[in-house]
Image 1 (cartoon, rainbow, N blue to C red):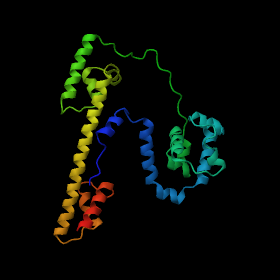
Image 2: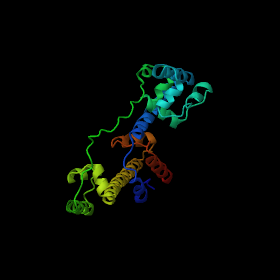
Image 3: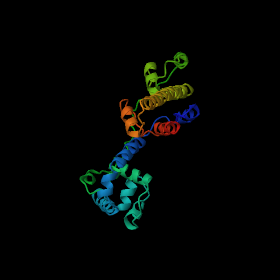
Image 4: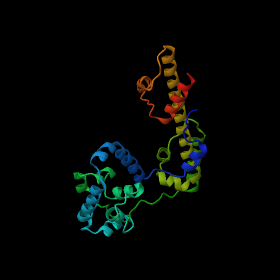
Length: 257
């Protein structure tokens, strides 16, 4: 059984989430960094060092004012007091928000290093300029013409461009397209996500077929398809049994030999 990518129902819900936020993207890369540094953190990291780094951050950024530091990051005034005074282990969500706020990777907070000296408070949000470009006004005829073009794009099964590309073709900004044509914009997003899902599904199917081929060839040569041997063949296509769906398929195939 192949582990499939999200289906149409899942994608329809996801289509309402227009794009991943900058914080989400940063959190993903920060977690990858944190996992990759587990050996270093086990060897040299500690809660005591984290507490010292927190005090150093407060001293350099807010003259020792812990409450001011938390408020500057949009956190509760006593958000880090438990870390400092009660030896509490930081929750992952709060740790990510704190580190993102001071431009510091989570792993660095537990180590003695120079990264702490480069931490900084977020810059205050700028007031929108009064000269900001206003959303273009569209007349009835113009909206009718653009709507016909959108219908042609949606009816074309081979056209699954994203919202930004379609907006560029129509001479609009992405936000203007969503404002004037909200229904079509949602359909464009869903159409693209469905196309990406189908592409991913085809790739998964091809990967599983290749795995079955590798195991069958080894078995036909009377060579036991050990994980090491199979992994070596998979690496030729930049695949790995570290991928859960491939590992599950590998285990099921071994049981059937």
